[in-house]
Image 1: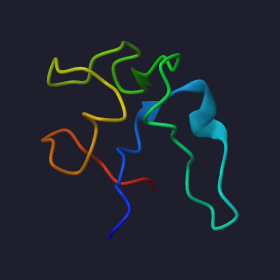
Image 2: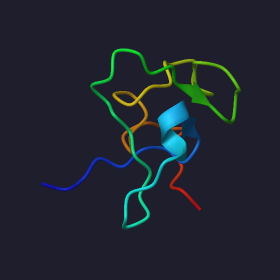
Image 3: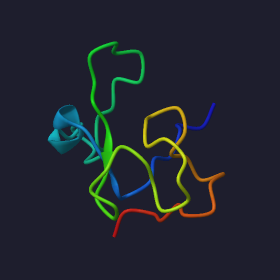
Length: 67
């Protein structure tokens, strides 16, 4: 199974942590995580949809890979 790709603009406090292979670490099951979009600086993305680990994948129109 391929790992879920998250938008490069999605952030939470744990999103600054990296795995040994360099991937950002998201704990999608965490009930205490507060997510935001770096593009909007809000808990919603440019498309007015929620910014969170479940929603901000490559299936969204505003998705951008990490640079």
